[in-house]
Image (cartoon, rainbow, N blue to C red; front, side):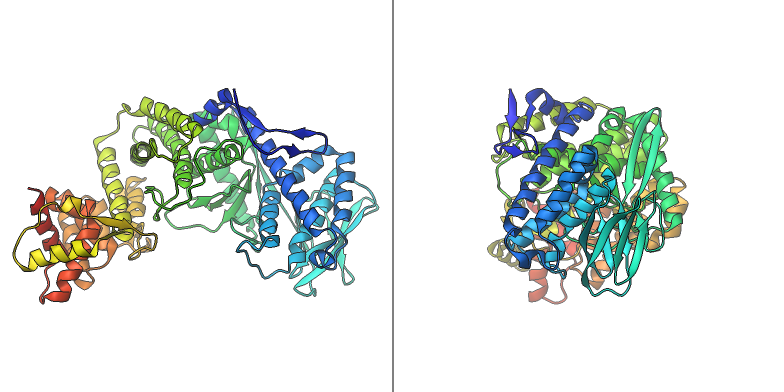
Length: 612
């Protein structure tokens, strides 16, 4: 039995239909199977790009305004054919390059006016096909070719190779790429940039794409560090952001140490990952956190901020590889309907998510869980690794349970989630420390309450009924049944300061370091520091003071609930953490109608009496 894509795919040789057998599907669902299934997914993605590329050519041919001052796209296509004849592998390197996917998707949306805008003229984007052809010809060693390619603000990109800078050009211009006497030149306005024999090296006017070669225990990984390709962004073109030699050295070091952890601790990922992740877009550091992201169009690439430690980078690599692997599978197999309603809670996001986004998150954080399970087992005294395992096992398991019976899942979707649930069940009985379990539960409650406070709204009639009961000195039964509506526009801003601080606190020399750096953690307060240090009373007083200054701050209200939980005021804490939107809405209503107003804590304590 197999799952087949519904679209026949044209290749240069014969029409194909990409499929995945149920056996391969099951291995992918279980994050197993090695590189072979990943290569099949990459082949399907290659064919998708060819279809879009053919469509761009068809929609551009006969419309000179769309390729502007450049030659017809047929000229670029002919050069691609020459490159394929000279060295098919060279053409494959360009076609399967992650940002060929980004470019073809973005340019397709531009042609079809699908809510995409950019300062570059359309012909600059169309003309990237000429740059792809030039790059393929260079890689294939095609002699004597010449072709005009677009330049934007003096920058002319050659995908997989690098970028040339020629001064004195207008914002949008053309430059010539040519093969002359065994060397490659890029020229315009009498200025010439020569690409060095090793194109990854820098030279006057040239910045090459560098590659980091890693080897750990015989497992090799070649990762491009691409800081120049214009289509390496997630949502549209972006300018070069050249790493300094020092930053490049740091990346080499961290990637080497992260790869050693992956090969040693999660060898199944080390076996498959090189087939699906070959390029990293380095972003500036983000203090106390390691944001990363990937795009379904850029198969093989991840955007990752500069790491501070190898374990966090290793977790980010397997996380993004999972997104890439699932993105490829979704080109072939539908796991859910086309429903894109933002309606579900995901504990790794601050906004309501569609079902597809939640499945992506579950799959990615499943790998994070597996990595930290192995790391904490290997380093039992590592408090941070123990917390990460306990936390993500809890969050992934709960989220998976929430969507297992979703009506929008297909048969394949149910089967996919069943495999994930079976593997998580194998880990459910793994012992974790009491401290790790406690912090995990507290942080889970923190995130859920913050999400609910900002994205749930009690019905106005419910709020009026509760406010009237308070003012009349009565109690109102059934607080848990108070109706709410889900909205995507958040009521108030959220901050990740407590989670950031806790990870500092649980890391090496954590108590001292947390005291030292807490003011540098974005949006952190003294109450947050007290909470992660386990001082519930000090945290409670701190959050009370914050709420006296502004009773509408989401982070302070949820912090109050966490501190009350830590100091064993369970009933009041439960109301704040489970129904924070009701506490705030009722408190707002009372404040409008009486002075002096009660505190949010007093309202929450009153609401807690309705459940007794």
